[in-house]
Image (cartoon, rainbow over all chains, first blue to last red; front, side):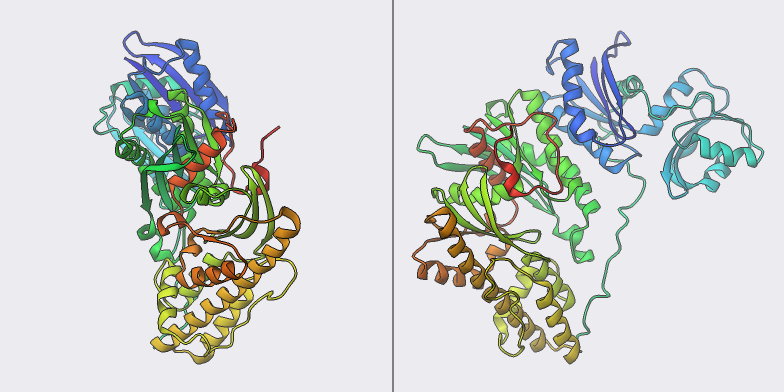
Length: 227
Length: 347
């Protein structure tokens, strides 16, 4: 099965094609990008596809990061993935950025708690953590720094993601042993493809995983009183 | 020639297929519109993040439905068009990215359409009129008078210096406790009301440049409303009638001035065209009808469904551009701001 993986949820704009059976990445490209994903992504996918055979008919599945991450960024990737799936007749699956970050730690048979944390700004993080063997310690959620550290427990913890450093600082203060040496800022697109290959299309829907509401409040204050 | 058009610049997600027949006329083959009114109603206006979230959930399904209803496969299209702005950027990005991905996979040309240009060209889809014509474009986000001289050839004669007309209608509705969207509600109330009970201003009336200003009128209405509050149903109807009458008088005056300016610079218009959601207002239509008649012109206003945002107008603008060879590449930017004058052939 050939999987086209797309990631624009954080500060990368990336795509790659994995031959899941052979476990081989056939082509990939990743740009580090704070903004402009909407302009860069489709030309990038075109380049990646041209490096295999230039056709989408050989793509059996599309995998895309659904967040948490930049709202606009993840919508770029999801809109592209769903449209590619529609036009190429391929199923589309969603993979969370946190799972993508955790996957390489879990795959190496890590004996400590493995956590992925993405900086959510305003003193918050998106956090997911698993124990050895894959048992969930913290399901993907939006947490304050303090709660994040509390939920990670007494450690030791190996942590990755853009929020790793801030969590580590807080955790070390609380006396928890934290290993930052394996931290990555964005998931590797090959891992998105691998997780996408084993995902169940009926459940891993390509829908945004915001983990936060849209931050809007109903307004009634402008109204003139009525009888 | 057949083109798919996607529209996601505000609170409607839309996809449509339009074809061009040999006689040069356009035909709407399918026209899907999904309004987000329910999602935004509690906020009394469009919330950009809520709009963007809603677009990405439904756009691919709407494309599928538009293709099914047109009885066509994506491979049978000649081009894929999307509104690339101006508008709420989060939504624009969703529609444009979808179109780019469809264009890439199918190998069809992409046309990044200016949303205002699509409104401006709708009269050629519905009535097949020739250039040049005078366009009054009035919606919740835009209010301008434009000399439409050709595809990508627009001269803005005047525009609002503050609120758009549709925006003013929405704000008045909110002020008076009417539901969202406010335009049709204010129009309905105005039918029952006395337009002369409140003396509301006609901003910029008689000024030589055909610009608009709505904020003073809105403030005058608020002062009147607060003066007599709490408001009875009668008061609300009369305020709406007074407001609508003031807007109609202003629009007719400003359009008359723009017609004069048009004749001085662009020759004889073939028609007076009204487009945008505000063009659905029946009182305004009748007033523009009278103005057109006394100016020896025909008023062309699209059917109500094509006044608001829709995919058919994007598909049609895509056809108009595609047949002139005006296509875009996959890095075409999504633009929050994009003046009509910047839609000409790119160097």
